[in-house]
Length: 355
Ligand code: R7I
Ligand code: MG
Ligand code: MG
Ligand code: MG
Image (cartoon, rainbow, N blue to C red; front, top):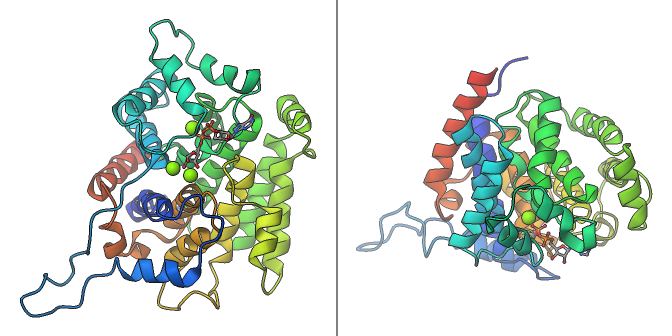
C-alpha cells in the first residue's frame, strides 16, 4: 500500500481547524439558515481589487478564533511530537496547562473539573479524574473524539490507532460511549488517509471494526445503563448506509437518527455521514464549492454542536481530499493556521520515521 503523502496530513489538520473556527460562529444554534451561512462564507473571500484599496488576495476582517476542540487537538499533537509516541502523563499535563492558560475557549461544562484535578500535585493517576466524572460513570461527551486526529497521523497500524485513540480519550472521557466515539473518529481519519477508498468500502470497514470495538463487556454495560441498544455506534453506521442509498435525506431525518449534540453518539456518526454524503453534489450548496467545503457547510447547516461536528468531518475530509481542497482564503481566516501547517509537516515526518 502506498504511504499517504504530506498533502493529506496538511489537509487533515487544516480541515479540522476550518471546521472548528467556522463552526464556532454558529455553535449552539438550533437552526442555521443556509443563505446566512453562505453570505458569511462570502465575506471570507478576498475583496475584489479596487483602486487605492486593500491588496487583492488578503482575507477581510479579523481572524476567527479556534475553540477547545483545536486547543485540545493541538495538545494531543504537541505531546505526540515531543514524546515521539503516546505518553499519558505528558498529554494530561498539556490538556490541563492549556486550560489554565486559556480557560475561555468554550470547554465542556464538566471536563473543566478534570483539568482542575489534573493540576493538583496530589494527582498521581492521570486517568482517575476522568473516571470520577458523572458519579463514576464517566463522560460520554464528544471531547475525546473532537481532538483525536493526531493519533492516526502518527500511528499507521490500525490496532495502534484504536489503542491510543482510546487511551487519549480516557484522560477525560471514561464512559465507553465517549471513548468509543474517539476510536470511531480516529478510524475514520485513518481510512481517509488511504489512497482512493470508495464510500462503500470506507463504511464497511468502519462497521466491521466498530462491531468488534463495541462488543466488550464495558461497552455493552455502559450502553445498557444509559438505555441504549447494544452496539450503538455500529447501528448508527448502518443507518448511514441506508441514508446513502436514498436519493435525498431530509435534515429532520438526519437530526432524528444521528443528531447534532454534544454526546459522542450524537455527533461522531453525524460527522462521518456528512463526509460521505458530501462526496456528491448537494442541490442546496453552490457548485463552485469543492467537496471539502461542501462537507463543512453541510455540517454547520445542521446546527447544534457545529464546531465539533465540522471539525471532525473537516479532519476526515481533509485527510481524504488533501490540502488542494483547502481554500487559502478560508484557511487564512483561521487563528494559528500557519502553526497548523508546521505541525502537519512534523507529524508527517514522525509517521514516516515510524513506518
Ligand atoms: O466532551 P467535552 O470535552 O465537551 C466537548 C464539547 C464540544 O462541543 C466543544 O466544542 C465544547 O463546546 O464542549 O466535555 P464534557 O463536559 O465531558 O461533556 C460535555 C457535556 O456533555 C457535559 O457538560 C454534559 O452536559 C454532557 N454529558 C453528560 N451528561 C450527563 N451524563 C457528558 N457525559 C454525561 C453524562 O454521563
Ligand atoms: Mg468547541
Ligand atoms: Mg473533553
Ligand atoms: Mg462544540
